[in-house]
Length: 181
Ligand SMILES: CC(C)(COP(=O)(O)OP(=O)(O)OC[C@H]1O[C@@H](n2cnc3c(N)ncnc32)[C@H](O)[C@@H]1OP(=O)(O)O)[C@@H](O)C(=O)NCCC(=O)NCCS
Image 1 (cartoon, helix red, strand yellow):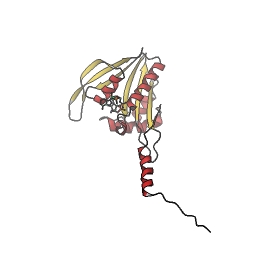
Image 2 (spheres, rainbow, N blue to C red):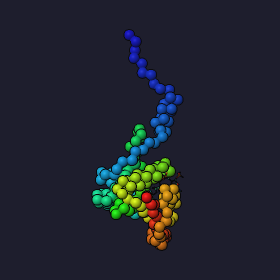
Image 3 (cartoon, rainbow, N blue to C red):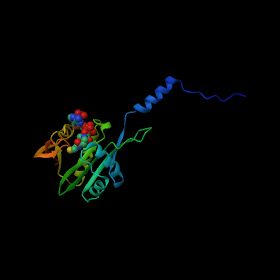
Image 4 (cartoon, helix red, strand yellow):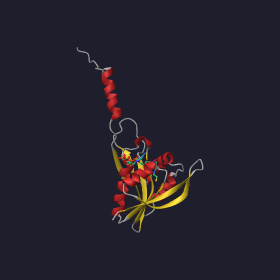
C-alpha cells in the first residue's frame, strides 16, 4: 500500500513564501471614529505628541454634538495585528470647522494617509454645510506644514511663543485656513 508522503517546501520556496507574506503592499480603510477606537487613538496620540491626551479626553471630545473623527487601519496585514495607522478629530459649528488633532503612525509616514484623513475631514465638513476649515500648527512642524500647504491651507494668523518644547524652547503657532466655497 502506498505510503502517504508529506511534500515539504524547499528552503528556497519557503523564503519566497515568507517574503511575500511580509512585503505585501499595505492597504488601508478609513472609517468613522467611534468611542471604541479612543484607546488606540490615545495611544497613537501619545506616540506622536509631547502632551498626550488620554482616551477619556478623546471620548468626551468625540461625543460632543459637533465633533467627528476618522480612523485609518491597515486591512491586509497577514500575521500581526497592525497598530492603528492614523486618525483625525475635528468639529464643525456655524459654518466653520476646526481640526482638533491628526496623527499618522511613524511606520506609515509618507504613505499618503495624512492626506486621506484630511480629505475625509474636508468632505465631512462640506457635507455639514461648513464653508471653511481652520487648524493650528507649530511653525517648526515641517511635515504638518507640508501637508496643509499641499491641501491649500494658508496662514490666517500667528500666536508667537505659543508652544514650549521639553527643553523649554518656544515656537509660534500658525493658524491656517482653507476656504471650502
Ligand atoms: C503631519 C502628519 C499627519 C503627516 O502624515 P503623513 O501620512 O506622513 O503625510 P502624507 O504621506 O499624507 O503626506 C502628504 C504631503 O504632506 C507633506 N509632507 C508629509 N510629510 C512631510 C515631511 N516629513 N516633510 C515635508 N513635507 C511632508 C508632503 O507634501 C506630502 O506629499 P508628498 O509625499 O507627495 O511629497 C504626520 O507626520 C504626523 O502624524 N506627525 C505627528 C503629529 C502631527 O504633527 N500632527 C499635526 C499637528 S498640527
